[in-house]
Length: 463
Image (cartoon, rainbow, N blue to C red; front, side, top):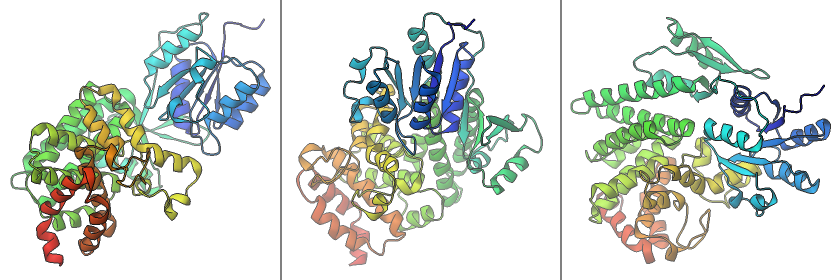
């Protein structure tokens, strides 16, 4: 006899790790059948094969196709299956989902990074005939292995895993193993992109690692070499960006963010020469973290010349600088600011959408902590790729639609990017001429004058 209480749940996502997390959340709380699919096409074939599916969890971008393709199939076949979109893209962002919540009252949206408790509650709401277990959901968080080695200063032992093709997570290091770091080094040499630790351990890793970095910063900030001080801050920025991507914004991550903001502000106030700072940043790997720090430096210097010296404004600027690219992980993608460029056109449609929407996605990721990330900060992030002539993205806002603070931030993030890509100050006069034509107008005029004042010495030397 078929057990009618068991439901068939499709989990569609092109990332095996996300499918694993979803599956573990479901299987440790419910006695339901899970069908894992790496694309919309595979999910459609699974629905055709099994005949009756009771619930669908689907990502939007899945490499070869999208969650919209899967959703359209359900609509065309008049299949009233609850559909949960799990993505950085909300239904409101994607053409084709206009009637998403009207099509089925049980449809839902979960923004990445999702919370396991929300997934459990949603399944409970969809099904009344469920079987619960007492086991807690199990999750993994990923870490770039070199960063793990770099910031785990205390060498605190953790169970460490790698993810293998067609397998789930395999433990490579047991907590307390003396050879743990050596094993991770071997996997780095093999080209492993990420290692994984359990989510609960990740919280402890965050606490210990950022705490150790902060202690190191305190010890060297007075007498240590400038290069070492900046390196600790850059490592801290990269770490806290990873923590927010993995854990979202919560009480624990806000405490970590506060420490990094404080460290960043202290180094900015030492007024390093821009040329020296640029050379130092160019010697480090990782455009996203370097760009975050350089944007902080430039924007705060401009704000100072505009007599915007309050702690609140500086904090908002630093927060916006650190998290402007939080929804991107690819350094090359973060360099793209022109949607007509050859670099952008060479990407596939999913990557293009990810880049086009990343300012909006980044702002949305921080909405859950709006008390900490005020509207001014989120608007700076959301609009940091807009341009005065309306050619920017994601909304094509012209100079009449942005505030003075947003104008300051747009100039700063573009100048930081141009300097990092150039790698020197040799082309600064060309940049200034281009900026004069683009920004010396409307709501950008005052921030642009602040920009000229902030870097007048460098500009005069290059004339």
